[in-house]
Image (tube, rainbow, N blue to C red; front, side, top):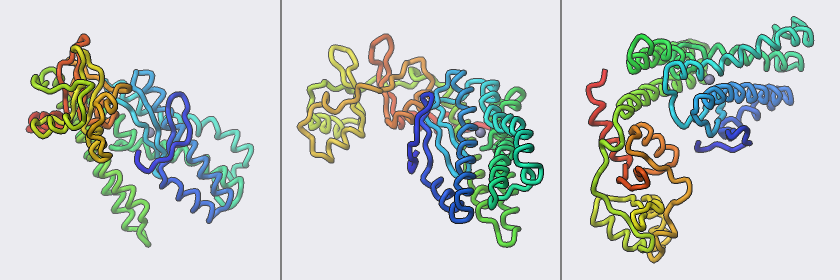
Length: 354
Ligand SMILES: [Zn+2]
């Protein structure tokens, strides 16, 4: 994520913190000193553990999570693909809030004894027992907020998973999205009716509204592109490059064709891929005399198969930041799929949905 700082890597997942998260410790430190720093650290840990709980269940279903980004308003676990079935979505979504609830229950009696009932029920960042209580109550608040049955909260996903058993995936999504919009308007109204108006709550309302809308487009893409296989829309005519060709020759090819990304082939075997980004880079650096083999991508090049769905192709492009990918079957290069192909097909087939 842009503007995120990598903190550490644990169980193959890198934990990142958005720079906006840095504002919080500063404010809390100004207001409450070290107790403020302690509270922020505790919130940070609870949010990270919440996201880890989602990630662990996702991994169990074979969904890879490569990073968790912590934002001031919560965390985001970056999953490489979407859950395949409503049950998977339900289990993944429930894991986060469930962790916070379990922690709330487990810590209740020990903290009641340690802090005393007064401090436990009177969280106050100005005293140490109060600060510990404050950090403790973050958990049920996190769980409660995330269980609101509306997108983009976990509760929205849980609701969709339940509704998807009865309605179509799109209809279930639409209901959870509408509820998300409803809650956003409710929060905005609440924020503006306060004296003075609560701008943090207003910001959260705006975030919920936008994120709920995004969920609808993701679901629409998944439904449309998840029904079309790569080989059904593959362009049969395409150019390939020899590893010994120069960038100047590639440029000439681009100017005389509609292709901007090229598979690099020798003796019918795919050696690598030269995407437009690399060609633009070569142009900027005036590397026109360089060879294709010096600039092509070989390692970490995602390969598509003909039977793969376009939605998976789209995800692979998103994750690799490439705008085109080669399609290979049984070691034979079948063609390439570009992001333009995907969006053209999407706009063609998504019409008339719902
Ligand atoms: Zn969550």
